[in-house]
Image (cartoon, rainbow, N blue to C red):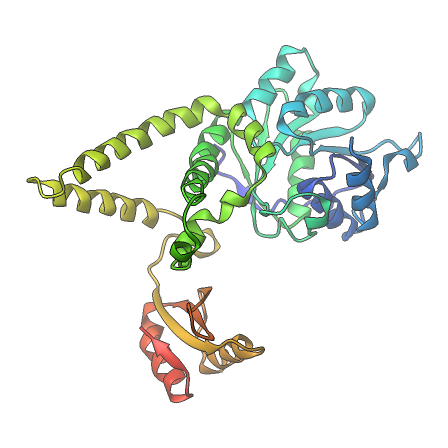
Length: 370
């Protein structure tokens, strides 16, 4: 992996052609158009393309002047057809750099190489951004702001092509980093694909659950099942494209599950409680390694909960008063109390600011739980 990290800003020139007008393709179009770059769109779905044009993500590709060949082609197609679209784009636009944004990289790179494609103008990339919603109607020009965007050049990729890919990501406000295709696929198998699988498996257990039982659900269940709402068609392709690396990780998960099942089958056996404590502690250790704010080292924060009336303006007033007190909120979560017309605002602050904030909010009449 490259040690070079940057925002990769490079003032990308146009025109840019985008093949694929789903969430990511349309968001790229909106972001580039907002920076004055001419963008042209193409999608196998006339409806998706029309919606992307209507929201201002670009103009239809057939309006591109014959002599106005693009400087850059972005392939935002589904993973299972990405290699086909990249190969076609390299042939149709001999003066353009071609990048793809598929979420798996090594297989696409190997497929292109096996076809004998000239890969000097090709760079694989992956913006690590998205939403649970899909399609161009969910697109946002700011979707990539401060999000990781991985550049995965092939050995054959030219320096100019790599810089163009960096400029695309940087101009959209992303944090640019560089991996090999293999490093990328190994990393996302753990930090992206496994969470999706575990979230979906957990959420699937809720299908036959009585509603009165689900009424007890709190933020823990909501947090761990949020991404289970993702698009099944897309994830079939992602998981299939990175299956070997995912299976290796799942073997380890299976060992942990078997260990847990064995312990819980006889929770009073000698050593059982220690094994359970170790399992939770191992989770603590892993969670503590996740980078903290702005990608910096992990940092422990203190949490407090403030009860607010469930009516307009309360959260805005709370945050305004916290600003007046002079405390920075590091994280914020919202929940509602079952059976009561109040909301619960969970606030994360630096430990040395915790007592100050509790006292100051209490003095101002807020109901604070610690």
